[in-house]
Amino acid sequence: MDTVSDLARGATSWLKRLWPLLLLIAAGGLVFAMGWQRYLTLEQLAENRDTLRALIEGNFLLALAAFVALYAVSVALSLPGGAVLTIAGGFLFGWILGGIASVIAATIGATVVFVIAKSALSDVLEARAGPWLTRFREGFHEDAFSYLLFLRLVPIFPFWLVNLAPGLLGVRFSTYVVTTFLGIIPGTFAFALAGNGLDSVIAAQQAAHQACLAKAAERGQELCPYGLDPSALLTPELIAGLVALGLVSLIPVALKWFRRRAPEAAKGD
Image (cartoon, rainbow, N blue to C red):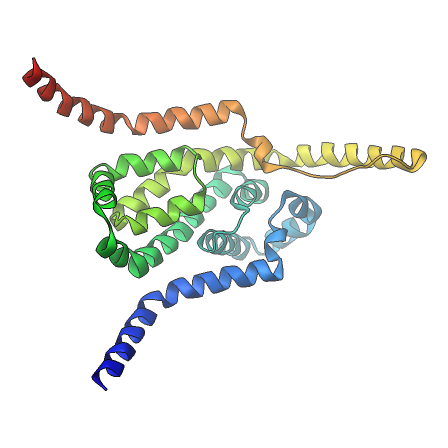
């Protein structure tokens, strides 16, 4: 009887711990099952731009709040389309306001993932961590600010992974929020600025598409795909700039390493 009671209490404890994570997974699964993520594309933005702008003109503050909420939810659910939403923010609200709204929304969504991962799984991972993982966690904690700032500035890992991993590694809440907020500013404003000039890109693309359709009608052979790819905005110059900023964020880690090595080298001599 006691064993059954213990199992019931254990199951209840696990359910209390895991229900936010399970809810997040279920919500993300529902979105993908319904195909709603397909609306987070530049093609949809171009197709509905007049309608969206009319809605914004009539209800500016409500539209801005809805944009922030949608962005935060999409980040929390780890949906693809973060870059598209950032571009849409610059396109619909201007690059300054759109960039600020995107930074705030992305930080909120990422923080939700962090809090849920930390509360649900961090203790379990710590209890079962082997020596290698324990050393890795300790090393990461020591310079968590610099490491996280680097990971945010340089987009070498998926955004959802950088949202999740710090919670599992026991990073402090304040460190996570500050590095997330600061680290995503350069890339976010770059995309928002690109979105601010998206009208001319859409107009040129639509004109080329219509010209292609006209030729295809005459010849009956040519295909005329219409697409706007946000990854095309990641120019080599932008990537190089983000990498340079990321390397700057690692300077404190490098200095600390050299300071440690200097006494060891002196002893060896």
